[in-house]
Length: 249
Ligand code: NAP
Image (tube, rainbow, N blue to C red; front, side, top):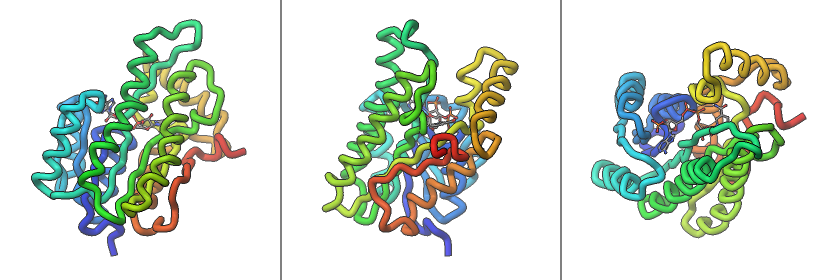
Protein backbone atom coordinates (compact mmCIF):
# COMPACT_ATOMS: atom_id res chain seq x y z
CA UNK A 1 0.00 0.00 0.00
CA UNK A 2 1.14 3.56 -0.67
CA UNK A 3 2.69 5.18 2.38
CA UNK A 4 0.91 8.57 2.06
CA UNK A 5 -2.37 7.49 0.52
CA UNK A 6 -4.92 10.32 0.76
CA UNK A 7 -2.61 12.64 2.71
CA UNK A 8 -2.31 16.37 2.04
CA UNK A 9 1.26 17.67 2.17
CA UNK A 10 2.74 21.17 2.01
CA UNK A 11 6.40 21.46 0.98
CA UNK A 12 8.10 24.84 1.07
CA UNK A 13 11.00 25.01 -1.35
CA UNK A 14 9.24 22.22 -3.26
CA UNK A 15 10.28 23.69 -6.60
CA UNK A 16 13.93 22.60 -6.54
CA UNK A 17 16.44 20.10 -5.18
CA UNK A 18 15.46 18.24 -2.02
CA UNK A 19 11.96 19.77 -1.85
CA UNK A 20 11.19 18.86 -5.46
CA UNK A 21 12.43 15.27 -5.02
CA UNK A 22 10.30 15.04 -1.87
CA UNK A 23 7.23 16.36 -3.69
CA UNK A 24 7.74 13.80 -6.48
CA UNK A 25 8.16 10.97 -3.97
CA UNK A 26 5.13 12.01 -1.90
CA UNK A 27 2.87 12.13 -4.98
CA UNK A 28 4.11 8.65 -6.02
CA UNK A 29 3.14 7.49 -2.51
CA UNK A 30 -0.43 8.76 -2.87
CA UNK A 31 -0.27 12.28 -1.41
CA UNK A 32 -1.67 15.53 -2.79
CA UNK A 33 1.12 18.10 -2.59
CA UNK A 34 1.28 21.90 -2.40
CA UNK A 35 4.67 23.34 -3.30
CA UNK A 36 5.78 26.88 -2.47
CA UNK A 37 8.71 29.02 -3.65
CA UNK A 38 9.56 32.48 -4.95
CA UNK A 39 10.44 31.84 -8.61
CA UNK A 40 7.44 31.13 -10.84
CA UNK A 41 9.74 29.64 -13.52
CA UNK A 42 10.97 26.96 -11.10
CA UNK A 43 7.44 26.27 -9.87
CA UNK A 44 6.29 25.76 -13.46
CA UNK A 45 9.19 23.41 -14.19
CA UNK A 46 8.50 21.46 -10.99
CA UNK A 47 4.80 21.21 -11.84
CA UNK A 48 5.71 19.55 -15.13
CA UNK A 49 8.04 17.09 -13.40
CA UNK A 50 5.56 16.22 -10.63
CA UNK A 51 2.74 15.87 -13.15
CA UNK A 52 -0.49 15.51 -11.19
CA UNK A 53 -1.97 15.77 -7.70
CA UNK A 54 -0.20 19.02 -6.97
CA UNK A 55 -0.72 22.76 -6.74
CA UNK A 56 2.09 25.32 -6.95
CA UNK A 57 1.76 28.53 -4.95
CA UNK A 58 4.21 31.36 -5.59
CA UNK A 59 5.52 33.19 -2.53
CA UNK A 60 8.25 33.99 -0.06
CA UNK A 61 8.47 32.48 3.44
CA UNK A 62 9.61 35.86 4.76
CA UNK A 63 6.32 37.50 3.72
CA UNK A 64 3.47 36.76 6.12
CA UNK A 65 0.87 37.61 3.49
CA UNK A 66 2.36 35.02 1.10
CA UNK A 67 2.18 32.29 3.75
CA UNK A 68 -1.41 33.31 4.51
CA UNK A 69 -2.23 32.98 0.80
CA UNK A 70 -0.55 29.55 0.67
CA UNK A 71 -2.62 28.21 3.56
CA UNK A 72 -5.82 29.85 2.29
CA UNK A 73 -5.29 27.98 -0.99
CA UNK A 74 -4.76 24.72 0.94
CA UNK A 75 -7.83 25.36 3.11
CA UNK A 76 -10.07 26.23 0.16
CA UNK A 77 -9.05 23.18 -1.89
CA UNK A 78 -8.27 20.42 0.61
CA UNK A 79 -9.34 21.79 4.00
CA UNK A 80 -6.40 20.41 5.98
CA UNK A 81 -2.68 19.67 6.18
CA UNK A 82 -1.48 16.18 7.18
CA UNK A 83 2.23 16.66 6.43
CA UNK A 84 4.31 19.82 6.42
CA UNK A 85 7.88 19.81 5.14
CA UNK A 86 9.37 23.21 6.07
CA UNK A 87 12.31 23.06 3.73
CA UNK A 88 12.94 26.47 2.11
CA UNK A 89 16.47 27.63 2.76
CA UNK A 90 19.45 29.53 1.40
CA UNK A 91 23.21 29.52 1.92
CA UNK A 92 25.34 32.65 1.74
CA UNK A 93 28.94 31.66 2.44
CA UNK A 94 30.75 34.34 4.47
CA UNK A 95 33.43 34.07 7.12
CA UNK A 96 33.20 36.13 10.29
CA UNK A 97 35.40 38.87 8.78
CA UNK A 98 33.00 39.33 5.87
CA UNK A 99 29.57 39.04 7.47
CA UNK A 100 27.29 42.04 7.24
CA UNK A 101 24.02 42.83 8.98
CA UNK A 102 22.26 42.35 5.66
CA UNK A 103 23.77 38.85 5.24
CA UNK A 104 22.82 37.90 8.81
CA UNK A 105 19.27 39.28 8.59
CA UNK A 106 18.55 37.65 5.22
CA UNK A 107 19.84 34.22 6.26
CA UNK A 108 17.97 34.19 9.55
CA UNK A 109 14.84 35.69 7.94
CA UNK A 110 14.52 32.80 5.47
CA UNK A 111 16.02 29.81 7.30
CA UNK A 112 14.83 30.43 10.87
CA UNK A 113 12.08 33.09 11.07
CA UNK A 114 10.49 32.04 7.76
CA UNK A 115 10.48 28.41 8.89
CA UNK A 116 8.92 29.32 12.25
CA UNK A 117 6.03 31.20 10.63
CA UNK A 118 5.63 28.47 7.99
CA UNK A 119 4.91 26.09 10.88
CA UNK A 120 2.87 28.48 13.04
CA UNK A 121 0.53 29.39 10.19
CA UNK A 122 0.03 25.72 9.21
CA UNK A 123 -1.10 24.64 12.68
CA UNK A 124 -4.78 25.69 12.44
CA UNK A 125 -5.08 23.35 9.44
CA UNK A 126 -3.07 20.45 10.81
CA UNK A 127 -4.85 17.22 11.54
CA UNK A 128 -4.34 14.84 14.49
CA UNK A 129 -1.66 12.35 13.51
CA UNK A 130 0.04 15.04 11.45
CA UNK A 131 3.77 15.14 10.84
CA UNK A 132 6.03 18.16 10.56
CA UNK A 133 9.46 17.67 9.02
CA UNK A 134 11.95 20.52 9.35
CA UNK A 135 14.93 20.57 6.98
CA UNK A 136 18.00 21.46 9.02
CA UNK A 137 21.58 20.45 8.11
CA UNK A 138 24.52 18.62 9.57
CA UNK A 139 26.14 22.07 9.42
CA UNK A 140 24.33 22.68 12.73
CA UNK A 141 26.80 20.36 14.48
CA UNK A 142 29.94 21.04 12.43
CA UNK A 143 32.43 23.86 12.37
CA UNK A 144 32.69 24.73 8.67
CA UNK A 145 34.55 27.88 7.60
CA UNK A 146 32.20 30.34 5.92
CA UNK A 147 29.06 28.63 7.19
CA UNK A 148 28.76 30.30 10.62
CA UNK A 149 25.49 32.14 10.01
CA UNK A 150 23.93 29.32 8.00
CA UNK A 151 24.91 26.71 10.60
CA UNK A 152 23.45 28.86 13.38
CA UNK A 153 20.11 29.06 11.54
CA UNK A 154 20.08 25.28 11.26
CA UNK A 155 20.92 24.87 14.97
CA UNK A 156 17.87 27.06 15.61
CA UNK A 157 15.77 24.75 13.44
CA UNK A 158 16.97 21.70 15.34
CA UNK A 159 16.07 23.47 18.59
CA UNK A 160 12.56 24.32 17.35
CA UNK A 161 11.88 20.60 16.81
CA UNK A 162 12.59 19.88 20.46
CA UNK A 163 10.25 22.58 21.80
CA UNK A 164 7.48 21.98 19.29
CA UNK A 165 7.48 18.24 19.96
CA UNK A 166 6.36 19.04 23.49
CA UNK A 167 4.12 21.98 22.62
CA UNK A 168 2.21 20.02 19.96
CA UNK A 169 1.96 16.63 21.64
CA UNK A 170 -1.63 17.18 22.86
CA UNK A 171 -2.64 17.86 19.25
CA UNK A 172 -1.14 14.55 18.09
CA UNK A 173 1.36 16.28 15.82
CA UNK A 174 4.90 14.92 15.60
CA UNK A 175 7.85 17.17 14.78
CA UNK A 176 11.23 15.92 13.56
CA UNK A 177 14.28 17.40 11.94
CA UNK A 178 16.00 16.03 8.87
CA UNK A 179 19.67 16.94 8.45
CA UNK A 180 21.17 16.45 5.03
CA UNK A 181 24.90 16.42 4.47
CA UNK A 182 26.19 17.75 1.14
CA UNK A 183 23.53 16.92 -1.47
CA UNK A 184 23.99 17.67 -5.16
CA UNK A 185 21.26 20.27 -5.74
CA UNK A 186 21.24 23.81 -7.16
CA UNK A 187 22.20 25.14 -3.71
CA UNK A 188 25.73 23.86 -4.43
CA UNK A 189 25.99 26.03 -7.55
CA UNK A 190 24.67 28.99 -5.56
CA UNK A 191 27.85 28.78 -3.46
CA UNK A 192 30.27 29.03 -6.42
CA UNK A 193 30.79 31.65 -9.12
CA UNK A 194 31.53 29.18 -11.93
CA UNK A 195 30.95 25.59 -12.98
CA UNK A 196 34.61 24.95 -12.18
CA UNK A 197 34.12 26.36 -8.68
CA UNK A 198 31.01 24.21 -8.14
CA UNK A 199 32.89 21.07 -9.24
CA UNK A 200 35.76 21.93 -6.87
CA UNK A 201 33.22 22.28 -4.05
CA UNK A 202 31.67 18.91 -4.95
CA UNK A 203 35.13 17.30 -4.90
CA UNK A 204 36.02 18.85 -1.54
CA UNK A 205 32.76 17.65 0.03
CA UNK A 206 33.10 14.15 -1.46
CA UNK A 207 36.61 13.86 0.01
CA UNK A 208 35.31 14.20 3.58
CA UNK A 209 32.19 12.03 3.29
CA UNK A 210 32.77 8.45 4.50
CA UNK A 211 30.66 7.03 1.64
CA UNK A 212 32.98 8.89 -0.76
CA UNK A 213 30.36 10.86 -2.68
CA UNK A 214 27.73 13.56 -2.31
CA UNK A 215 24.12 12.57 -1.71
CA UNK A 216 21.27 12.82 -4.18
CA UNK A 217 18.02 14.65 -3.49
CA UNK A 218 16.09 11.35 -3.83
CA UNK A 219 18.04 9.92 -0.91
CA UNK A 220 16.87 12.77 1.31
CA UNK A 221 13.32 12.43 -0.03
CA UNK A 222 13.31 8.78 1.12
CA UNK A 223 14.11 9.90 4.67
CA UNK A 224 11.49 12.67 4.49
CA UNK A 225 8.96 10.03 3.44
CA UNK A 226 9.81 7.95 6.50
CA UNK A 227 9.34 10.90 8.86
CA UNK A 228 6.16 12.05 7.09
CA UNK A 229 4.47 8.65 7.09
CA UNK A 230 3.01 6.47 9.81
CA UNK A 231 6.12 4.25 9.46
CA UNK A 232 7.67 6.70 11.94
CA UNK A 233 4.65 6.84 14.28
CA UNK A 234 6.82 6.52 17.44
CA UNK A 235 9.57 8.86 16.25
CA UNK A 236 9.39 12.38 17.68
CA UNK A 237 11.81 15.22 18.28
CA UNK A 238 14.74 13.53 16.53
CA UNK A 239 17.32 14.81 14.13
CA UNK A 240 17.75 12.30 11.27
CA UNK A 241 21.06 12.81 9.46
CA UNK A 242 21.24 11.86 5.77
CA UNK A 243 24.89 12.62 5.24
CA UNK A 244 26.84 9.56 4.07
CA UNK A 245 28.32 9.50 7.57
CA UNK A 246 29.93 12.94 7.36
CA UNK A 247 28.90 14.14 10.83
CA UNK A 248 28.67 10.65 12.36
CA UNK A 249 32.19 9.28 12.43
P1 NAP B 1 17.69 24.38 -3.64
O1 NAP B 1 17.65 23.41 -4.75
O2 NAP B 1 18.35 25.69 -3.84
O3 NAP B 1 16.21 24.60 -3.10
C1 NAP B 1 15.87 25.61 -2.20
C2 NAP B 1 14.38 25.83 -2.29
O4 NAP B 1 13.99 26.82 -1.32
C3 NAP B 1 13.95 26.37 -3.65
O5 NAP B 1 12.71 25.80 -4.01
C4 NAP B 1 13.79 27.85 -3.40
O6 NAP B 1 12.90 28.44 -4.34
C5 NAP B 1 13.22 27.82 -1.98
N1 NAP B 1 13.39 29.09 -1.27
C6 NAP B 1 14.54 29.74 -1.00
N2 NAP B 1 14.27 30.90 -0.38
C7 NAP B 1 12.93 30.97 -0.24
C8 NAP B 1 12.04 31.92 0.31
N3 NAP B 1 12.49 33.08 0.84
N4 NAP B 1 10.71 31.66 0.28
C9 NAP B 1 10.25 30.52 -0.26
N5 NAP B 1 11.02 29.58 -0.80
C10 NAP B 1 12.36 29.81 -0.80
O7 NAP B 1 18.44 23.73 -2.38
P2 NAP B 1 18.26 22.33 -1.61
O8 NAP B 1 19.61 21.76 -1.50
O9 NAP B 1 17.16 21.53 -2.17
O10 NAP B 1 17.88 22.90 -0.17
C11 NAP B 1 16.67 22.55 0.51
C12 NAP B 1 16.90 22.65 2.00
O11 NAP B 1 17.90 21.68 2.36
C13 NAP B 1 17.43 24.00 2.49
O12 NAP B 1 16.80 24.33 3.71
C14 NAP B 1 18.91 23.74 2.70
O13 NAP B 1 19.47 24.59 3.68
C15 NAP B 1 18.86 22.29 3.17
N6 NAP B 1 20.14 21.58 3.03
C16 NAP B 1 20.70 21.37 1.80
C17 NAP B 1 21.91 20.71 1.72
C18 NAP B 1 22.59 20.47 0.40
O14 NAP B 1 23.79 20.14 0.39
N7 NAP B 1 21.91 20.56 -0.73
C19 NAP B 1 22.55 20.27 2.87
C20 NAP B 1 21.95 20.49 4.10
C21 NAP B 1 20.74 21.15 4.17
P3 NAP B 1 13.03 30.01 -4.73
O15 NAP B 1 14.49 30.37 -4.74
O16 NAP B 1 12.37 30.11 -6.07
O17 NAP B 1 12.28 30.73 -3.66
